[in-house]
Length: 107
Ligand SMILES: [Zn+2]
View: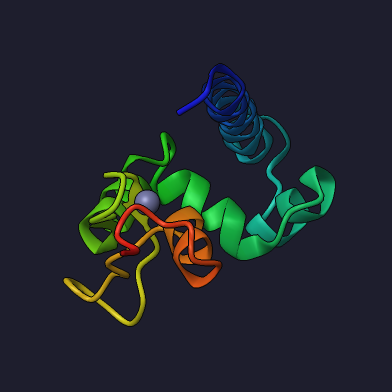
């Protein structure tokens, strides 16, 4: 992961924490419903529900990592396809490199 990418992740975590704090504040302080909170924060009601259910994003991350694969070319995380244990064997970078004939596994 590059420094930029980890900074982007940190930004997202901070942003989520702020949104979670707001989402928690509204029903207590102003008695807003999920739909009203979603409206205020400019997010979907499903997102607000996720903030209550999974405030740190940890559950979503765990699911993602369970479904993710490891690239056989460079060891990066690969995208999941349909379910557990079904992730791609190559990351996008290696796939592209190989299809252009410059990949690590090309003869
Ligand atoms: Zn790769």
